[in-house]
Amino acid sequence: PDQQYDYDVLVIGAGPGGYVAAIRAAQLGLKTACAESRETLGGTCLNVGCIPSKAMLHASEYFDAATNGTMEHMGIEVTPKLNMDKLHGQRLDAVDGLTKGIEFLFKKNKVDWKKGHATFQDAHTVKVGDETVTAKEVVIATGSSVTPLGGIEVDNSKHVVVDSTGALELPKVPKEMVVIGGGVIGLELGSVWRRLGAKVTCIEFLDEILPGMDADIRKESRKIFKKQGIEFKLGTKVTGCTVKGKKATLTMEPSKGGDEETMTVDCVLVSIGRIPNTNGLGLENIGLETNERGQIEVDHEFRTAVDGVRAIGDCVPGPMLAHKAEDEGIAVAEWIAGETGIVNHNVIPNVVYTLPEIAGVGLTEEQAIEKMGGDKKAIKTSKFPMMANSRAKTNHEPDGLVKVIAEAESDRVLGIWAIASVAGTMIAEAALALEFGATSEDIAYTCHAHPTHAEALKEAAMGVQGKPIHI
Ligand code: FAD
Ligand code: NAI
Image (cartoon, rainbow, N blue to C red):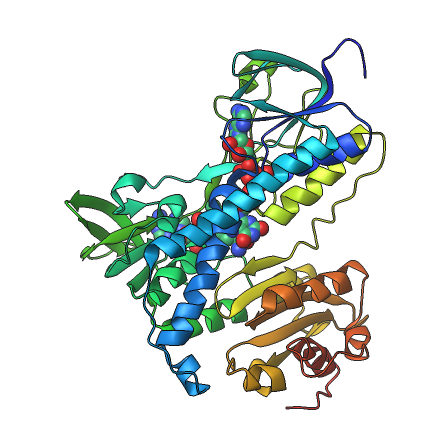
């Protein structure tokens, strides 16, 4: 290490971006420390994000199958009883096991964990709690926090108006729940409580849920959620919220203006997006400014405008996803070590872990047409319904479809979208296809095991060529 500094690399934040960057830097022989203000490692994802939400989704899926007739239909008759303490216990166990796992990996790779909030003194000097740490390169991986909604005060401890963290921890099932925002969090956590017995209404500002996804997929998803019992108020904005005891009364009006409406429920989840964590980091001490969205701008080597300071993950532009942060974590460490770190930002899969799961990678049909200068004939698309997939049908999972979008002339695949019980797993194959520049013919002539949900992707690709077998 450079004698001038305590460390070669100091990473600020131990989420999927930061902890992965720190481990990779250490693997590459760099003396590395990682600062984290939280008591445990793993960031938003392991502590209050990806992992605990999936623990609740998975458990509630079983409860739903036992109560909504799915199991009975398969000849399994049970009388389900919800034990909330155990339900939350298994969630906490999952978090505990995985965060401790990162602690073990830090020890194994000799990454020093600096406990406390980090603030820049200058570009190479960072105060972490009471300690001052110097490093040749500093990586900002401070992640993001919940976007507040004006006029609505979140208090997770009261369990009435909550954010995603509060919605993971509700001690009992609310009778009626409103989720503000028809995005990923609203739909995932709304699904959890709907399955456990809540009547859930989703209020979305735009005219359709899941902005950013392919239009067919957005519409089809909403139909499926509606069939499952989630009510939607689209094109609606919440203007205020008052809490009296254990009830919250929301006022809302059409997004374009119009008559006000009120609704009183037991629980309100505010899930309208997340904002980068850059406050309190002392960016002013190093003269680093954020863009209008609060993000830190970086180049392809993740260098910020300040020499020796790089940034990755949720606090830089791009999708706020754990796997994107992780891949940037590996790449930034490789750049610092003098290697070439590559992240293909055009091929980042996106998954909503509801049932069915909703997943996509690459371009939406709308983006593909735009890329072709507005010429709809320059692309080919094909959709294959899960209803026609033998495994999905056998498993009583008929909802959903796979959609393949390809360039007409070259047949090169531009985007793949799926709604299917295991779409999150299926999309890995789609990402690999895009990464390798596959044509729809390549996918159509790749042998897929039978009977699997993945055959639906093969058939959708065959459809692009006009010759699917099963529809
Ligand atoms: P974070 O995970 O936010 O980690 C940043 C860390 O930095 C935090 O631990 C924070 O305490 C620490 N920190 C911040 N400032 C300082 C400071 N000044 N000093 C010291 N430490 C500091 N993504 C997926 O891909 N799949 C999912 O299924 C998924 N589910 C989610 C569910 C929920 C409910 C939420 C809220 C998010 C979910 N996400 C999911 C998003 C995912 O959690 C984030 O994209 C990911 O955690 C970003 O990683 P990161 O390393 O950039 O930041
Ligand atoms: P989001 O950006 O996914 O969705 C927010 C929704 O709220 C949008 O549909 C938006 O139009 C709507 N909205 C915005 N302002 C509104 C208002 N005032 N009233 C009503 N609706 C409004 O954000 P969300 O769900 O909070 O999640 C934050 C981020 O966390 C996601 O963008 C994603 O990056 C990450 N995440 C990822 C998950 C996954 O990968 N499975 C799961 C959960 C979170």
